[in-house]
Picture (cartoon, rainbow, N blue to C red):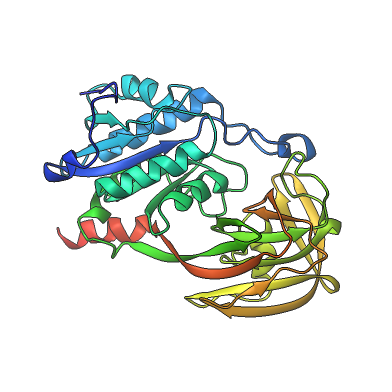
Length: 328
């Protein structure tokens, strides 16, 4: 069944069947990094194809229902038609799109209320962040369809759909716990899932970060040498232990050459490094005028505090597929 969404009660379906949430961002992978670098564009046709393959994979295990955000571009509906019968039943959340990231956050809140076993997010790090804003401890299946995709899984979507089904059978054993960064103060509260970076900028403008000279300081939950973006800068100082975040102060000191966006390599100067535990606060330097969350300038910085917190969970597809082999 493909519901029109208006009559669906998210809580009701938890009594009958396992629910997997689905949030697709129709505008991910379309920011200025296509102009200042060589970032790809994941167009609507490709996103429809990705989602159709995910749906096919989700149908390969125990019965479940997909509870989806009815995105303004109709991508999920189109993907359902492409997948045909090789997909689980799909219902839509009772949510009217506003065509802002609040759609993803509100969808995540409703999925948490519905008791969803996992949330498949098709987009970039910004889409993941919006979902975590709505459901801070969500079990995520983050599928690459953005720009830097520091958290995204890059395996074949059909495989990720099947791995999601297998992982649900084990509870959270095949989901890796992550940290997030809480941004608080000055009458505002927000979340970053990869990094919160303070910059010298008067305007949000095109939002994306690509100029190292504007960087002041940041808190990072991910240090990954092969990541695109600031997470690879944090990785230059070694791996992060579980439950730890990393503070970087930018300035004269050690030079790190990093891929800040696809097709964009820059040298970044680091003056100070220290690791943080959960709950260790960082008062934002008065020199910072704007905070970038997960690579995008978003918030005025005056009087804000950055604090690592326990965050969402991320699917480990290889662990889930290994469990399948163990059962045979």
